[in-house]
Length: 222
Image 1: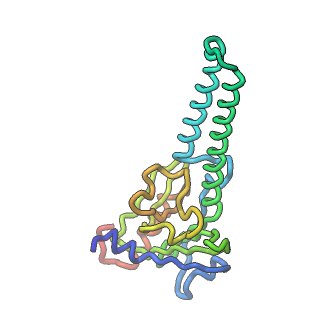
Image 2: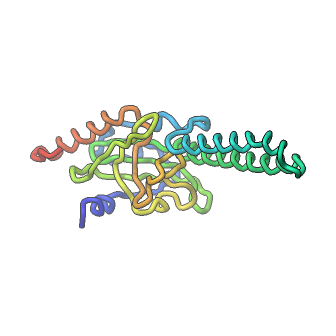
Image 3: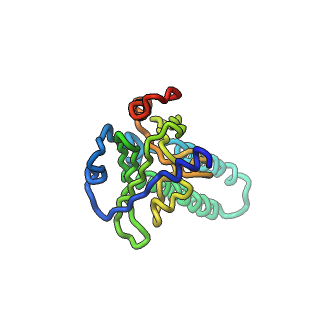
């Protein structure tokens, strides 16, 4: 079994009805760092790929409405029909932008990140298929075998601390850990478990690595 498959099998998902974050930790576990997305949790805070989608939609709308003077000079049909069609198309674009922003805000507003001396944790609050509010606790034990990676997301980087085969394990009814602001190929093969949009991603990565080094003093590859 390869390192990736081994580490994905080590990830645990704990579903809780209602609990305090401090109750997630074991009695012998020490909290080292907590955080949350510093950007993207607000409705008017588009990030990453979502910005590209919005730019493309704005350009499309401008090109579409910019053609109205040309159509008015050359077309023989009622100009009102053009306004109706373009108006409906513009509303569809606006609705799409609204859905993208809502989905991204819904995910990033409801996540909290924790690093302990034993594991990296992503806490995601959301509803299950019965519409009941649950806290999904995704834990990945620290391991020198896992290729921790800093993703160059914007405006702040993201730290990948694990991966899952299926995000539906995290959120049976909803968006899991994915949202429109992530890169297009994010989660196509596996679903990354990441601390998204954290300004101190490098410091957190070094904290995890130093913790692993302290637990495995003879490991010189980190």
